[in-house]
Length: 256
Image (cartoon, rainbow, N blue to C red; front, side, top):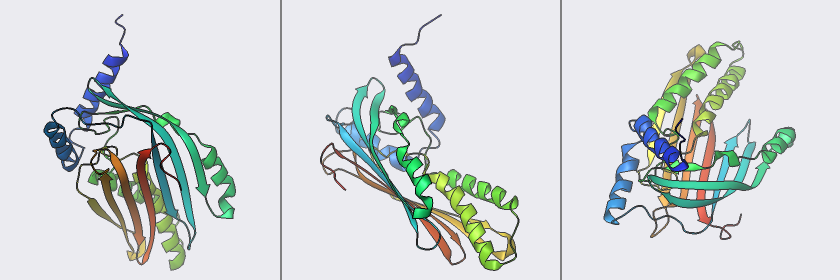
């Protein structure tokens, strides 16, 4: 039996990921990165010291309440034969939530997300182990999930209760749009992305998902400085937002 080496495994992951996700990854992200690599006369430059990757996720709850989850990871970049690898471990987590959600907040704060690493990036800086989180197809899938959940729920007679129910169902579907990292998160290269999908609801109500994503590289370097991804779910005049903010700084430089 042939033993697969670590290098061969990473190589297969990269090449396989590019093959499977090639049509899904936004070309607006890939082309500028490839051009940047060619202009520099070699592979993408990477941070040479440990970095702090931060994510702040803020979600609207009922009324004016909000849920805020803050996480930091220590990450290190390394060049591989067929791309870039990123290893990392969670170093802090904090959850801010209404007192009614204190138990859930405590559980979330204790959750270790270090299992998301290692990551493998292509030579152009795209995460190849996951598909694009800003594709139109993801919005379509979220709409289908919302339709399925709504179809399986009793429809309240009261119109306000109807609005709350549908908004909650849509928000649960829309939240899944933030489950994966954007493919060009670590090496931003595309234009801002804005996508909208509508959904027809019982009782003549109209629903909608909207996703907005924009990322910025460090001045003078190709890697991430700051990225913002926002998902808005709407039912009539009611809307709720989930906002995800990423940043990458040298370890010890960021405080909040």
